[in-house]
Length: 340
Image (cartoon, rainbow, N blue to C red; front, side, top):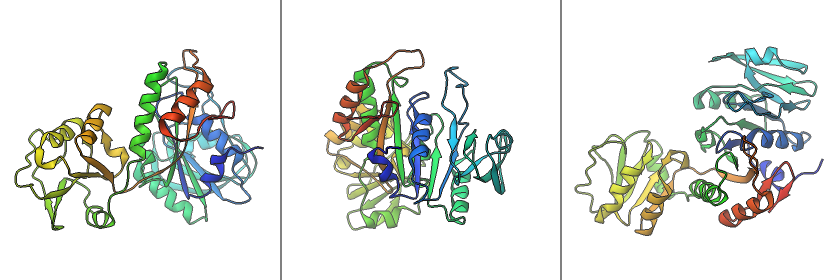
């Protein structure tokens, strides 16, 4: 079976998240495509999902969904309820203490090719535990299928690489779809801060902190960027400002409007912590501000589904071409094996 270039790119990493910008953007189709083409003679592969994946019909839109087909030799993690419904022969590896709404998480190895519903660990912490367990079984590559609006699964703290799925379900206005997708890609590709900043800031899991020009670390009184009262007094020597939690519009605007902070490097843990509008983001950069991250995921590919759940269809070739030009990366319509 032919492989598009990004299949080979996946093999350079030990973990991959597949994340959709909206339901019905082709995330599950992308997972199916990847699983069909991975060279199992080269890699031991395990797959799981946060949320339920593999249903034949979407539970929200009632549209048809591709079923997940596992090949012989693949490992998988799913709930007890869905493990009992599997349509393949498997070897039970483990039943964890990780509980979901559908029972405990079961890990198994497929002994035959067959279909499965995936509903694995329900939290990022549980997912990371499951991934560590997979390492003990000499798994080379863990693939995580994301749930709706769970971009946190693409955090570098969870997986080394990611594929982003977008499409007409996100917007049927092509110009708007291209702009929205390009902005998310811009966030994913934000550069990493200095090694000294990484060493100093990585252990800080909460609060707002700043580093002065002599390299000294200080804590701000504001607990988070959501705080209504944020004071920047005495920060004339600030060179780096670190937000350990979520970065939001109101905080970014306050930093931008503070003259002494206009040239500051603003650092967040990773792109999944950024909840700002494109307008505020661009204004901050235009005024000389710089945003950096402690950890960065490798964006391997962007895929598109040109058809919306209501049946509206965008021109696939044009959509791939426009997004590709906006992000300077190849864009794939996997149903047509189209690449721009």
